[in-house]
Image (cartoon, rainbow, N blue to C red):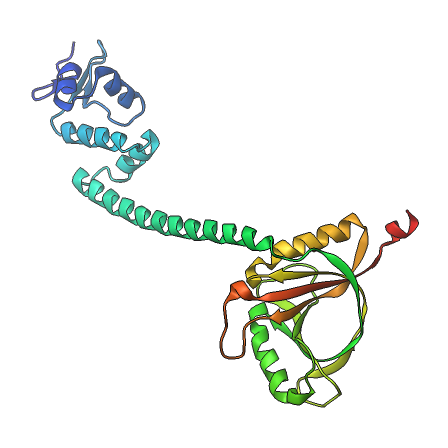
Length: 281
């Protein structure tokens, strides 16, 4: 047997010093996590050096913290020439950063759960889906591309320009048949009594027709629930959607005060016509 040299500990001695079982030490060796300083080529006996005691204790501690073998191995391999205490200090900083991120995620999740509960409660007060006929209406409109929240400036311009000619609730026309976050195609409109020329504002007649409608109570960011109910109604009856869809703001934010979004009232109107399939069925 080749002698391992002075200062080396047998695996049994090293087990007592580190409070790790021989089975665990063998496992760490097989995994490349804690390789003995010397292995007798004849007997296969494992020997460990004094400098490996702190490393073994640190590995044991990391395992108690539920670090995976692969995570610890990567940590050791990336810092082979670095003092292990510094490795642990850096890992401590990383864990604190992760705790902050998880705390933020937990708070966000708590808020989402609260909003979801609230949305489900408010959905019970939303009116039923119904069909009705819309009359043509003269509107002043500004067609835009951008975010939906940008419509406020257009409504403001129409309101200031037409004043006493206004005769109805503001509405938004949606020309896209899919969601766009930053380049949506929409038109802010307000019903008017008679035509008036204003630069940048289009005066035109909004056609009437049969529509599926629903009055939504609550914030705008919860409108998708009501849209889902409308389109379910449309699909069940095999209607074809006539663009653009409309949102009529029966009660919403004012020009100065935003009000309480929970008290907003919006009527969604989707013009329809029978599809070819429905006509032949």
